[in-house]
Length: 482
Image (cartoon, rainbow, N blue to C red; front, side):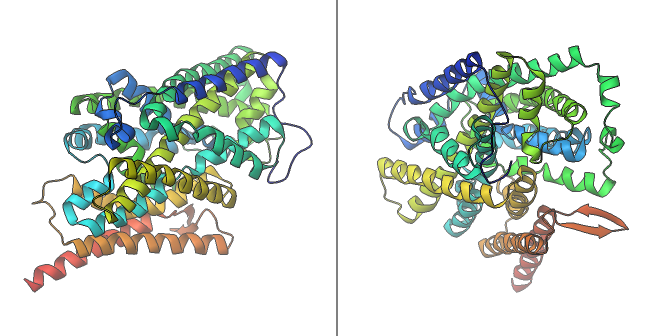
């Protein structure tokens, strides 16, 4: 089931299932459209007045940051149990660093976005460059691909039609309520993601003993803790976890907390919830590897296909709702960030005297642009893992060092704005060219051979290397001139 229409849906629901799914979708839309802003300011629209309490903060951060749920199914098909080591553990480590080091500084700062922070440190040109890169990072391409794939599994429609329809319906309420609408939807998504995956994981554990069931998996490397990946592969994925430090959605949630302590504690609590959800999703994925013979041609369909095979009516609908809620919450969150980046950090910085109403209008226009770019990317790169690892890695590599310095004392790094600007631009271009080269040479995973070991280099490491080189050389050059 790829781009074309299919003869029948992958997920066949009973009448009861459709009622449950319909009620859940109506609840999402109702919560989103019923959001009432306290005032008409940009701060209220984009950051809910910086008033998120600890429970709300945790629920929305957990559901937004874990929106790539079908991508975990795809990852399990590649790495098996190694998915936790490659795509779980690194993010716990960097989230812990964020909580202890960055969270109090992010919430304690006047700025509510990464481009705004960089502009306050190195001037408007650096802020605009950061806005462009953050927009490219935040566009919800992976999420519209996953939601479109789920719509296709339920309807049998073509993937392009499913992606477009899912994107339009899933983001409509954002235009009215901003972050507050996103938060209300995120609370429901938080509950359903654990209920949905808890049901299918427990059902499989009860009906299919794990030891005997997993023994039927033919590729025994998938049963290894590393998923059969060598140390260089593990290292490259670990570095990808640094994405946490520059993720705009993560940053926005922390900046919107009611206090620096709420931001710090909220991230720490969220790590525990992410670990629990990883346990549920990886367990579910391993059962899919064992019970689905053969696996779906499209790896993103692994979770829907398993639900179709093992769950009875009623429970199947709850599992579907868990997937829908998780994806929609994240898709809306990143659409909000990318739209705000284009409207507030891009256009509004070129029009400094703009009113709040004008900024909100440009931000809503940014939502449209972000969705269009997301759909184009999703239909060009039909792999969530590739979108995470390669497309996002190109931006993270360019942004990581400047963001770290932006929240550190000036005496640690007081480089010139020209050097920072050059480092971001050159690092992204180097990574982007490497990505294009990989696509042109049929090497989408960007695999290289080093020390006789073949592994995916990705785009983050090359970008990070160029960024560090330019910052180091540029800073040294200006020091000599003094």
